Image 1 (spheres, rainbow, N blue to C red):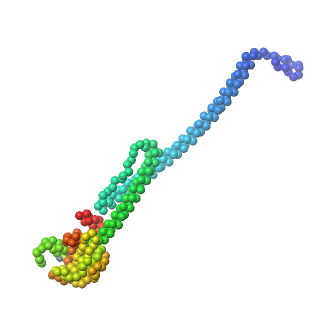
Image 2 (cartoon, rainbow, N blue to C red; image 1 turned 90 degrees about the horizontal axis):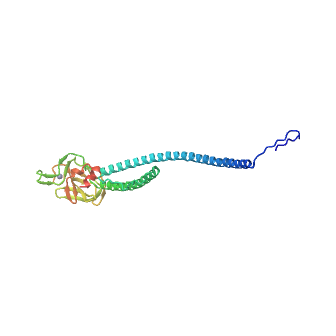
Length: 286
Ligand SMILES: [Zn+2]
């Protein structure tokens, strides 16, 4: 019922049935609940949307990072295989066995991120292995250098070879146990390797003779000298002057009779005249 305040207007009355009021209340409550729940639902959806967006951005960033890693890992692997190639090349030159990596790859990693981390692990292992091998190689090289120092590897004097090693008829019939190199009287004769002077003195046929004992059962002999520059028991190094060209003993003119002996037996000195560290290593393997 609607009653105006001035008491002159008309009074309106409206009959509303009870069920309409109940219905209206019900509808109002329903609408309120609907609005509230859709608000909650929508805000939840928005939150999820934001979360998804953030996750996707993060994913893209991570993917980019993984790709970067993957590229870097590939570079590392390439560098390692280059290292392995050079190492093997060096080993081949030095007459060492080439080596195969002991590291095996497994296929159980399929995810890219896992693959990258596995690649990195493998690279790490390979580098450790490589370092070990390089240390081994360095040790080997220092051994080789030492052995090279004790290997006859140069001319005792530079001159014409007037008589080679082997059987001959003149000036006597038999095995010529060394190499005759011509040289002017008094010119210096040099040790062809590091060693210790084992003999200085006169020997039948050889005249004034110097002998040097090198390691590894090798010795050298220098005959027909005019005079000595070393004493027995003295340490000498490759290139050091040990005596001078002469004409002593069974000799038909000033020259050096040069011998290389392995385990006391003369071998052909020609192969020991001009060796570098690589050609020397071939001789050691014989
Ligand atoms: Zn001779």
